[in-house]
Amino acid sequence: MRTRGLLLLLALGLSGCDEVTPAGPDCPAALPGWLAPGAAPFHQGYRPRLWVGMAGDQPTWNGKQVDSVGLDKRLKLASDPDLSPRPFILFDPAGASDCDAAAQVRDEIDRQAACGKSGLCGQGDAAAFARAPNGATIP
Image (cartoon, rainbow, N blue to C red; front, side):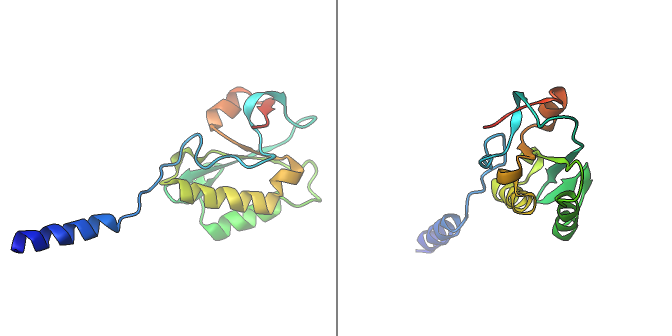
């Protein structure tokens, strides 16, 4: 009887766990209008690039960890329509603790920078973007 109760308790405990999906090249998926490393040209001329990454469940901005408020402030500045030229924002989700954390950051970038309309956002491996500084393809 005692063993059965222990097994039931163990089964209930295991069934309540949510599986965490790891972040990776396809998780989270790039949104429409976002660019990926590749061969088609970026926008005309030179654009400064801002790098957003992940360190666990926290975003990084050009390699330095920031909280959500810090990310929000930086994205507002980077997305100012009066900036000329507006920077290209590159998101590399590889360091994220899970796909949901990366998706939240990606969605905030998309919301602030209107990526689908502006075409000034990319997602993928930072090293691949660095190897092809003048190239990107639309996923």
